[in-house]
Length: 307
Image 1 (cartoon, rainbow, N blue to C red):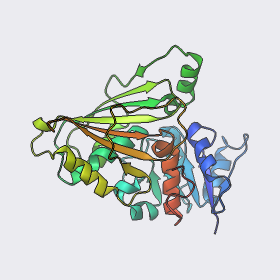
Image 2 (image 1 turned 30 degrees about the vertical axis):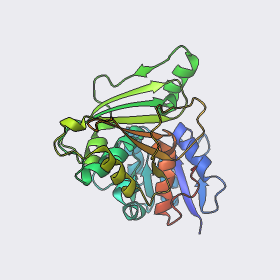
Image 3 (image 1 turned 180 degrees about the vertical axis):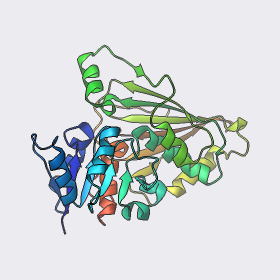
């Protein structure tokens, strides 16, 4: 059976990549609005009330308005914006963390943020297992390709090739922090320091751990073993056993829906670096949305993904 999918905001970066993953599949048919219709409230409302699924690739306020347009319909929604990531009644679209059944049975799914995906993948399983403290002031350092910033930031980097590095959210109010805190069950919001590099896509998210100063924290080998067990059944997330002396992002990174995790440790085991590498447009955005759509439609979780 073919399910219809309406992508509201299909002309944006995330929407275009979702279309690429769904086009040509027999199990999904895209419901497409032309240029004249895609900004028409009436046309969008009709699409929501016709489609089996909808993906919102919109700014936060527009996503909330879209949900209102869908009221009274049977459409099941995946929202790629920040608007509903900690909202009651929405299932967080990270099946490895919240459970595949929760996503599969959901009517409303909020797609995780790209940075949040790396942080939560590293920290949540370890806090749940009691190997890291929930009551600890975690820090998170991350770099991303500029495509995650939307059309304005893409243009800024591509039109001004002299930009070598951009750090931002210096007021410490990044919109991903609430979901990072809530989904990991932390007592304190993490101190999050995101930056952008002159690469179109790709992302690294790091959580440094001063284990020797953390009461009750497990040793690095136990942290790696726990993550390996937690993700053993995942075809998307891999806990890497290698510990190279450097970890690179390529400016020519191919699209990927993978998420790779590493645990590095000092010789005495008193310090560790947890690092996640992913594609900010893949598992960090469009790939995650398609993974949730697959589960919601009762399909193979990784159908159409680039692994």
